[in-house]
Image 1: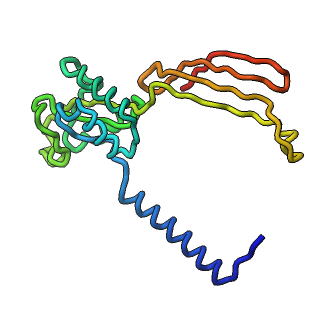
Image 2: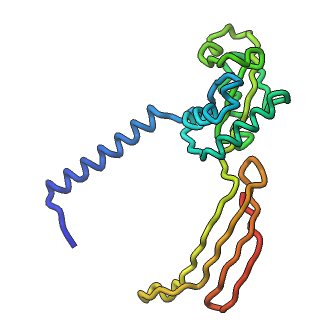
Length: 205
C-alpha cells in the first residue's frame, strides 16, 4: 500500500487530464470517414480498399482486403451494391445512410461515366443544386472469414474462497456465412463439474 502527497496527486491528476484532453482532441480532428471516392480501377485493388479502410479507421487483414477487391472487380460488369442517384449537396449523406442500412463498415464510390477518374466529392457537392448525380457505391464489410474462440468458466463458489477450479471449458470455430457478419460453426467442450464432454453448433450474428 502506498500513498501520494498532495503535490504528487495533483501532478498525477494533471497528467491524466492532459492525456484525456489530448485523446478527445485527436478524436475530434480525426473523425472516421465512412465514404471514400476512388477510380474504378483503384477500387478493384487491395490498396484501394485499404485506403478506404484507413479513412474509416478500420483495420483489415490482407486476405480481407483481397477478398473485398475481388468482389468489387466481379461487379465491374454487373450492377454494384447501390447506384446512388441524388443531388450534389445530398451525396455523402445518401451514401452514409446506405452504409448504415446495409450494416457495412464503409463504402467506396466511383463514377460509372468516368471509371478511370477518381471522384472528387468536394467538387461534386459544389455543383449547382439541380445537377443530377449518379455514382456506383460498393459497401465493404470488414469481417473475418473464420473466427475462433475459447471460453473458460471458473467455479465462482471456489473463487470467492481463494481457490481456482474450472467448471467448464469450450472452444469454437465459425465460418462467415453472410457478408454482414453472420457466422455458423461448431463448438466443443468439457464440463468438469459433471464430468462429460459436449459438442454443438454455434450461430453468431
